[in-house]
Length: 331
Image (cartoon, rainbow, N blue to C red; front, top):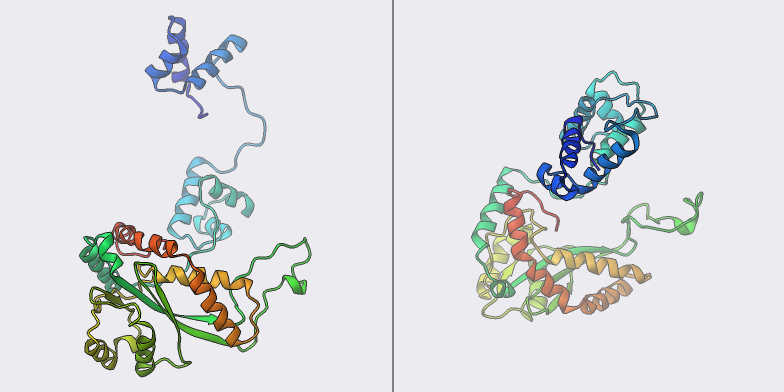
């Protein structure tokens, strides 16, 4: 309950003494009925409507000081609590923990920053133009679009690993995220999905150039593509080379040539890669061939409903990009 000033408390008391009900007073003064009841009970018990002096040490920072700390943290979100205090140049004899508490009370919490592509003005403009151009696409239109992408899957993952352990057992061997000194073996895979839930996964050679990429397309694309399909690929050099574009043209592939650069948040297959790699954690693969078998198994095990829901999310993604003025969105 927010603290009421003396004027409002006096108005509550006057209205109640004239015979108004607590509900009527609440409606007239636009105050919660619980607050009206609190003021009335306080008056009946103490004969006063003002608050008694509060116990405890008074705050060292004024409301103005706190606003300044919050403003600095909002403008520079990467600053620590100590750096925020130093930047404010306030002569406050408070600990870093107190500054952190002030920021938290204002809804500013320390969190790990989400990783997104660094965009310049050209990228942002192209993202906005693309979203405006395709915002009229219906759900049936998007079902005709084939989304594709490559992804590298490591045999020994160096990604963050969560463990449940006892205090003091951080460096127990079973609780560690094991890494390799010079990096581990990995597989590059190419994937493609369609609006009816079908999908293809192709193992790529170690070095993917225009020629080898066309071989990948020959293995994976033509099993999904039909006369009504539209094919999407990103701007990787082997995708945009003259040789590859001529190959797609000879095969009469309808290619969406205006796909915006650095836009994984618009490519729904990126979400499938996350699901696939999360499902791979339960496999204890020791060789590249075992990893490939596990990839195939988990790829085919992903429910078609997941792909349906991703396709349904495309119009919302477009609206979010436009609402965010071209900057990255949560997907």
